[in-house]
Image (cartoon, rainbow, N blue to C red; front, side, top):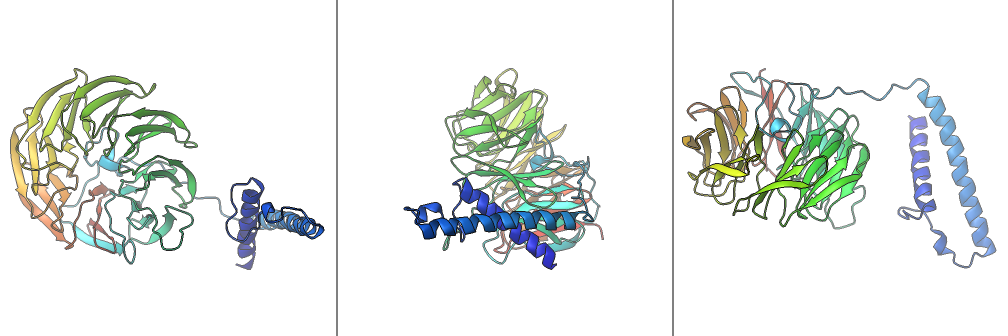
Length: 440
């Protein structure tokens, strides 16, 4: 244990030395050279002693590291997300909100854990992969939990240092995971790439406004929108910007991907079709209304709820609206779940609306007692969704009849994640409760 502490101390001093050397970091207890402007003899001697100490630490670190790593275990290798996982918002590049995992007929509470002591409310949708849950909360933490028991395995903070009397930037954006990385944006506009195995930082990318969009992926790039009016495409390896597409309004929703195309729609009242290779717009569809939800795409059809109380079906290849559902009495903050028959989305009129995907006609509505901002999830013949009335519901997909509910008492605006036979969702309780349901 003492040897490990020595190694960590050495590593810390080396990191501080490198920051001092490059002129990038003067924090903690390091004294910059500018503190001795005239370079007196005493100052030169002090600098020499400082440099000598650093090189001594380097030599010690090399010796200790070599001694300690000869018998060390290699870093854990995690498998890529499996077919029955839920690795990203809406469970796939097309953002259909359809689970590939089965859920038991009778759901039971397996565990519940807190994201924090206070200010840890959860608006972010979790990801499930490889027996782990990856979540994020408004207290500025991204965390990894054991899916079997909720035990916390690691924690990542949105900032490495927090000035006194200030808060860590929180997370509203959904979490996305790949074989080796966790991706999520924060409320101050930083996009984070985190090592999936141990929660250490891989890289960050700064935008100019809050990020509520989830990540999506194309070849070796990651995509996301920002409230700075832009859609970004970055290299997954190092976070370098490949291209940036600027719109005329904030981009709240997550970009869907199909073939070589992605879609961006937001506060500029247009749906834009973007070529993923070039980052250039290929076509657009005027919507004449703002939206903050994420589109779902099947073949040439795109489905999206709007701020104008409508759900739209758009043929994105032909650049035309096919139908508009007008049965809601308030805006849609919930992204639609879409299968071969239905498009299902929650509205701030406190209802979940099920729409015939071909005709745009109402199939059924389910009335909750609060806004339905949570995006529904389809699991076989059931629909799962949260509500601001403090409940998570399971409904029959054919008729909208309530089959099950769990009550927290605080809003559920996050969306459920369904993977590996479990349903996971976080609430807006002050301590950010995360619930896991399945079969005991």
